[in-house]
Length: 252
Image 1 (cartoon, helix red, strand yellow):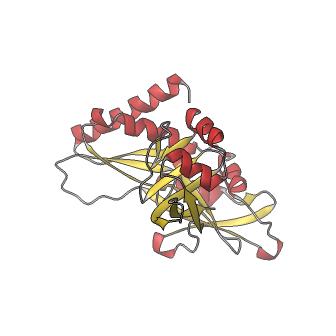
Image 2 (cartoon, rainbow, N blue to C red):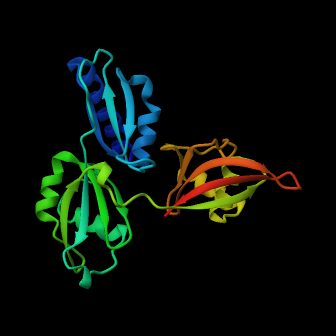
Image 3 (cartoon, rainbow, N blue to C red):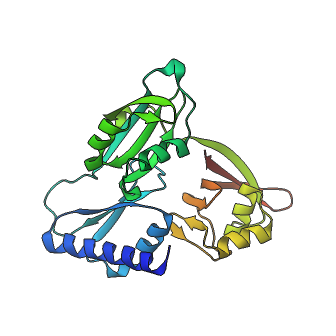
């Protein structure tokens, strides 16, 4: 992000907090990417309201921020809709990936901030998480992805048949330092780990981290741009040489 984009993001988030406090209502950001989430975390001292984040499903990468005033007397919910995308003619459907769905969505001229995570499931089923105000537009106009004709309908979170997929993995590390952990998970050399950290490509729970000695904790979601993300689930013992065994979930 350029400095102008960072400043604009910061200003927008602070303004939303001020408006929410002044009007006594809950206001919401767009879906924030990892860089924008870092800006959100860095500027919490300027917000005039409480904040919460949610991406529509557990462990979503893109997150929407809710700005919640103290004196609030009504129930509220995130303005998030789930769209199930399925081939109209399954027999002739191509196998589609995340990039295919995102490309078709962006070709409709929709701002990226209005779209959250895209889930790719088995059996040619896909889910687009988006702001509820844009959902009718997708239902009406998203009718083809690559060469595959598709149908789009809204569904509730309880009806979701596509879930975030992950693989259970185990690793062995000398310490739970961030550089050691990402080197183990992605088979990096130590110098490669340091390069990713220096380039601001590593995030813990949506916040950019450059310190290689930062300690990973149970429940941390760690993203390495260009490689994916994983949940640091738990440490569970040591080897005969005193190295740490840990379990993690690698998101696919």
